[in-house]
Length: 416
Image 1 (cartoon, rainbow, N blue to C red):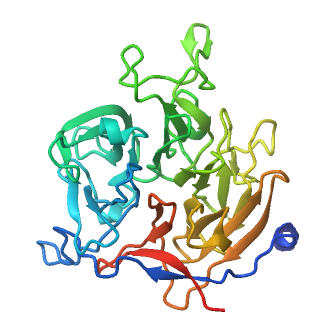
Image 2 (tube, rainbow, N blue to C red; image 1 turned 60 degrees about the horizontal axis):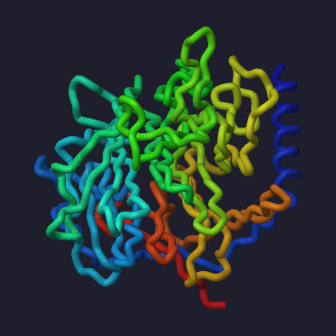
C-alpha cells in the first residue's frame, strides 16, 4: 500500500511539473515597498485598553470612483479610514465597531467587505459586509447600504444603515466577504460555505442556501418582500420542482468553498476569484453565470473524498492551481490596469497568506490558458498578505497585519 501511495504521489508530481512546464515562471523586475509609510491612523493605537498589542488589520483598500482620488481602508474591527495619498493622517469615515464582532481566535469574522455604488458621486451610497455582534445571531453576516453625510464628504451617516441581506452561518470561519459592483451595475457577493472543514452540511452544492455561492443582486430596486431586486437574467430564477423552490434566485455561481477576494478586470469585465483550498490545493477561477465550481465534490481540479463523483459534466475548471508545498491559503487580488508599472499590465496579482509569496499571473483568454506565473521577489521577511486593493487610477496595493500601522504596500520597478 505504501508503494502505491508513493507511486501516486510521483505521478501527481510529474503531472504538476509538466502542466507548469509551458508557463513562464521568471521573476518580475519588481519589488514590494511600503506605501503611506508615515501615515497616522486616526484613533488607532498599537496597544489596546487592556494593555495588549492591538495590531492594525487593514482588511481591504478601495476608492469611491468619484474623481476625488481618496483612498478608503477599513479595519477588520469595523472602522473605515479615508485619506488622500499625500495625507499625514486619516479621517474616520465610518465607525460601526459596536456592531461588528471581531475576535482574534475567530479572525475570519469582522468587517470584511466594502463597495461604492457606481453612481456614488451623485447618490452617496456605499455597501458593507460584516459579521454582526447581535448575541441572538452568532456567526451571521450582514450586507448593508449606507449613505455619506450631507454635510461632510469624508463622513458617512451611521444612522443611514439599511440591512439588505442577512445570512446565518453555522461556524465562525469561511465567511467570504468580498462585495463588488460589476460592469452591469449589479452587486456581486462572495459567501463562504458556512465553515468548519469539508463543508459538513453540503452547502456548496445546495442551491437552496446562499452559503458557498457568488450572489448577484440589484440594489437599485426591490422585488416583493426583498430589500433588493433579482436581475432578470440570473441563472436560477424560477427553479421549482413539485411546486417547491429548489434554487435561490440570488445565486450567480456555486460550488464555492471560501473565496478570499474577487474582483472585476476593469478592462475586460472578467470576474476573478481566489478560492481557498482544504487539504491540498489552492485555486484561481474566472466566475461565470451559472457555473458550478465543484466544492465539495472536488478541491480545485481533484476529487474530494468521500463525496466525489470525479470530474463529471458541468464543473467549471479553475484556470490555475497550486499545491500546499507552495502555499496553503490564497489571497486574491486584481488584474493590473494602472500606468506606473507597464510591464505588469494585464497580470492578475495574488499571494499566499501562509507562505508569504506573491505572484503575477498572465492569462491568455484566446487560448484559455495561463501563459505566465511570475514570482515577485522580496528580500525581507515573508509578507502574509491579507488583501489587495486598487486606487482610482488602477494602481495596486496589498495589506498585511501590522503592529506598527505600516501595513500597506505597493510595488516599484527595480533598476536594471
